[in-house]
Image 1 (tube, rainbow, N blue to C red):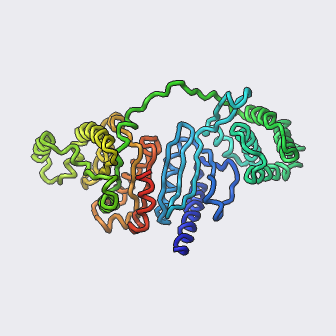
Image 2: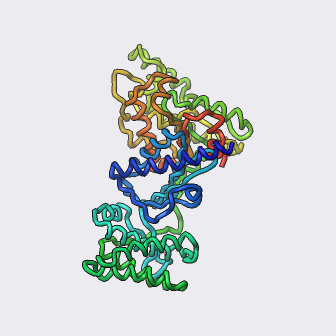
Image 3: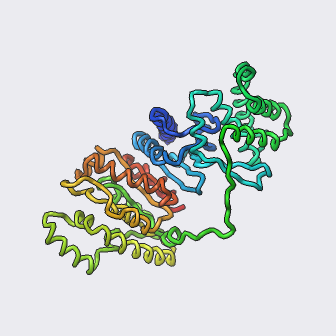
Length: 434
C-alpha cells in the first residue's frame, strides 16, 4: 500500500511537470506568478498560482487532460468566480492544486476596501517578452500587491522564501538597474530590501509603489463591482441533485455508473438520460424519421431529432432534480443534453459537427452543479466499442472541454477510466458525495 501511494504521488508530480512543459512548447499564455517548489511532498500542500489569458483556458485544460490520461490521473476543474479557475490533479486521495487567475485582484490606493483587478490578458501580454528583467520586475510588483491585499503574514516561511526569491532576482541585476532602468524599478527593489530588513515594514507604501510601477507599464486597474443583491442563477440550483456522467461510447460510463450506484444505494439512484425524452410523442417522431432514414440506428435517429431532445430532456431534468432534492438523494444520469447538441458522432457519411442554432440550445440546457466526464486513450475506447473514429472522439472531448471552460458546470471531474474501478472509486465517490 505504501508503495502504491508513492507511485501515485510520483504520477501526480510527473503529470504537473509534463503539462507545464507541453504548454511552454505551444507558447500558451500561462505564467507562474509566485515561485513554489515543484517536488514532493511540498507539491501536495498549498497551490501553484498562474496568470492566464482567458482565451487560452480551453487550450490549457486540453494539455493538462492529455497529461492526466497518460499518467492515469484524474482532473477536477472548478469555476469558483469570474476571476479564478482551479485545476486539481487527483489520484488516490492525494492532489496537486493549480490556481488559474483570469484577472488579478489587488487593493487600490484607498486600501483593501477599494478592491480592484487587472486583466490577466494584459499581464500575459507584458510577461510574454524576451526581456526577462522586465517580466521578473512585474511579477515582483504583483507579489507586493498580493501581500497587501490578502494581509499575508510576512514572517511565514513561505512568504519569507518568496520575498527572498524576488529580492535575489532584483539584486542579481543591480548593475543593469543602475545603467538602464527607470526610477520605479529601483523603488520596487528598495521596497523588497526594506521588507526583508524590517519585520514591521510599511507594506501599504510598498503597495503604492507597486501600483505606480504597474500603471507606468500600461496595466490599469478597474474597480470590482460587487452588487449587494447577487443575480440568482436558477438553473444551477434547480438541478443541484442531478449528476451527469458523460463521455464517448466506450469510455466506461455505464460500467462505472452501475458499480457506483450499487455501492451507494442509500445516497444514489440511476436513470438513463434517454428515458427523459423517449415517450409516446417521441416514438411518433422516430417513426416519421425512420421512414426517411431507413438505415439509421436508434442512436443515429436521436441525433437527427436533437432539437426536440434538448428541449424535452431539459424540462424533465429540472423536474427530476426537484423530486430527488425532496428525497435527499442524488440522481446519476448516463449521458446529458450536452451529447445531443452534436451531430454526426455516429454517422459515417457526415463529419461530426454542432447542431443548427447550437448557441441557443446550449444556453437552454440547465447547468449542473457538478458533472463527471469519463476519459481514456483512444485505443482503449475503441477496444471497448469500436464505433467512433479518432477524429470523432477528439471532437466530443473538445465540446466537453469547451463547455467546462465556459463555466457551464461549476465543478467538472474528468475521471480516467484507464484505472481499474477499485483504484478510482475512492476519488470518484469523494467527488460525488461531497
